[in-house]
Image (cartoon, rainbow, N blue to C red; front, top):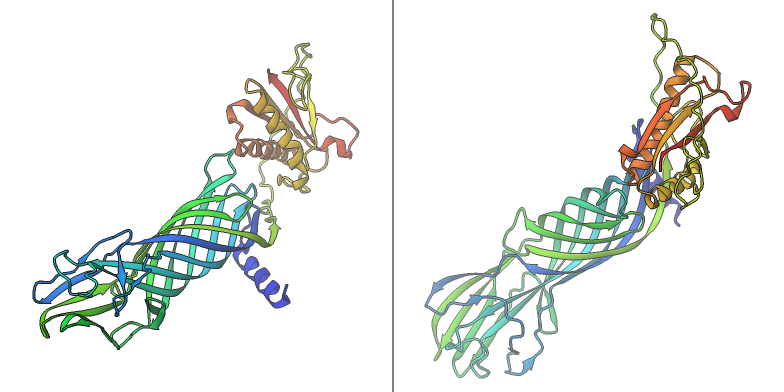
Length: 433
């Protein structure tokens, strides 16, 4: 990858995560391609200037279209958009919720249908076609910000809501196989034997337009995959271009209509991509304040170990056959003097999650212990914070909090003379099976 691009992405990641001092965050850049279909929100607006030959804007699935010589041509409408973009996702440490920034470039095509009353044949008299089609194409660049969260705690799918703005430009007007940049000042004449239609486009086509883009959809937790619904609502110019339709019969003007077109659309979009660059940033824990002049509360007296019960836990999972009320040492790891779980703990805790899902009647007690180094009151508080961090992990993964009790003992239950690493532990006791 280009070094400048890598440096830019890392700098943006650092700026977005700066100041996140309480909860570890995870950032990920992704590249996504997109394709979607759209439907015009605003049908062409027809204003009668003179005469009574009014066009009727409506959606016709497969109208007949003819060129200026009366030859049948393919005019099936194209309403789609496609493009590519760069996304940055900033999630919490369990990737269950977070924020996203999205920058996207796209091409959008719209098709408009105008229907003549069946008893009027002014469009191409020799072919007697009752309808015309207009194709508008434009390019756009958009930027949006959104929020996402898990559908359920155990689900890998996430809901998201985004809002942003898109700048559309380079409007092109498609006539058959020809693509003409707007404004197109040429006239289109469909005249035969002194009767037909003359179409002239207005000159006041804006060079660009701004639209607001609210969006809602679903996305995958780990993989850049999205399906969304959105609308593009014009902010500045509700009308992109207009045409003057002049109806001629026997070499005499019998009516005129002004037809206006908008690029407001409703979109159904699918996006698929790959992760480009990601990193994990663990936040610094808040600094502990110095102790006050008040004396610290005395450490609790050691509680006697409960007598073992010969009843066993359900025979399912890694913890099958374990007896009730017997402590099980869990392989969980924390940052030194902190309650932040390290990634090495995930495998063991996921085993606990899986086992508790398979055994819905099981309840557990998490016991926290520390080494006998430093202030006893701080050790007691640290042991409580650590077992609560483990409990939070299990709850986020879908285990009910009513099935998990916690208790911190500080440095009151040593298993070896201090200092000793084995004293710093979290134990799980099966209390109900």
